[in-house]
Image (cartoon, rainbow, N blue to C red; front, side):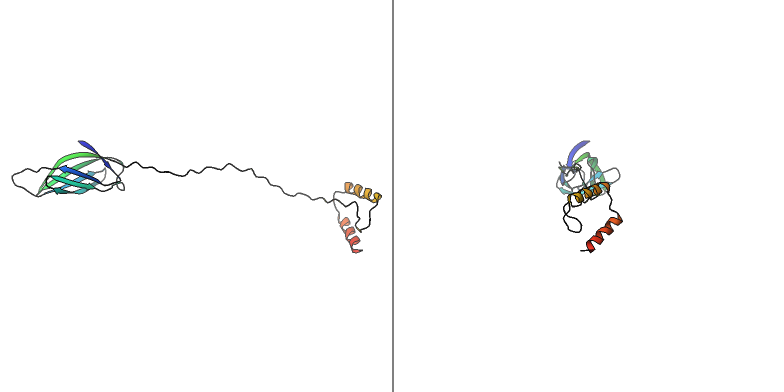
Length: 166
């Protein structure tokens, strides 16, 4: 059994030389059978005297790459003949594909900050009632600020009273 190379994704034209001998001439019909595991395909041949031409369309949508059995069948009047059996090795053309590859970005270093506490310093030059502050008062304010880290309700009320006296 001979083997021929065929393209799976393009049209193939096969030409066979067929000689019919007998006592009376008859009309011959030729076809090429392509057999897969679970299905067979038949392709009609065109006779031109002693040559038969069979065109196989692109078969990439129905067959996979590989080797398949093929038979040339000739029917003369009511008689059936198989003058030729061969194997067709179907391949796809060279195909180049490209895909983009995603590159994983390196993790970025993130920093964040948030305000936890705000401490206000008391002004040492001006008192709450806008009078100049003496050195003794400055020392007392510094001592008090060192002693007290928390503003009490009483301190707030005193400030309000001093501001309302203006």
